[in-house]
Structure formats: C-alpha cells, structure tokens
View (tube, rainbow, N blue to C red):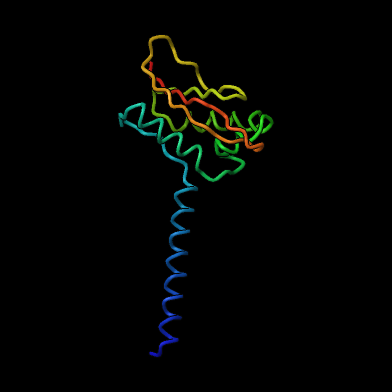
Length: 140
C-alpha cells in the first residue's frame, strides 16, 4: 500500500467515525426521557437533569427547548404549555415543577412546607438580554 493509499484510508475511517458520533448524538437528542419509576433521587440532581434536557435538546414543534421557548415573549406564549407537558411527563410521581421567568410562570406553585429545591438559571433571548429564571422542584 502506497503513502497516498494510507491517507485515503485514514480519511475514510475519520468520516465513518464522525458519522457514527453524529448518529449517536442524534439518537440521544431525539429520545424523550422516560419517567423514572421507583427511583428516588434528590431534587437537586433531578433539577439539574431536567434543566439540561429542557435547555439543550434540539427544538422541534412537538418538543421545543426551554431556550427556544424563552427567545421572545411571543414564543413563550406559544410554547410554554408544551414545555409544561414535557416536564409533567419527565418527573417521577409526587414531584412537581414550577418555572418562574420574566415572561411568566408555568407549573404548580410549591405548597407551603413542601420539600423543595430552587435552581436559578439564565437564558439569553433573541435581543441578547439575559433573563433571570428559576426552576423549582418540590415534593408534597
């Protein structure tokens, strides 16, 4: 095998590896997380996982990302109900969510005396403004 042939083989190997990585990322990003059943985790861990899924998943009409939903007040009005439905699907039974943003709130406000965890987060809207938001998870 000549010097030029080895370079072509490495190029093909790199292209195949890149295609496999992209396919794996697409598969992971396209999957809706299944609700945890019988698994008890801390509200802090659950809030981190939930926020990561909502902020960094690919946006689609059926499953918009939280970042896309907060891109403008109009987009919030249009997509916040979809985000709320996704959250209800992802949370284990007995765990509730409340998200407070400058554009409005979604979810169920924590009950007095409930065990809760508040995770602040920042999202930039389409105008480049930083929006201070809070994700609160709680258990009754």
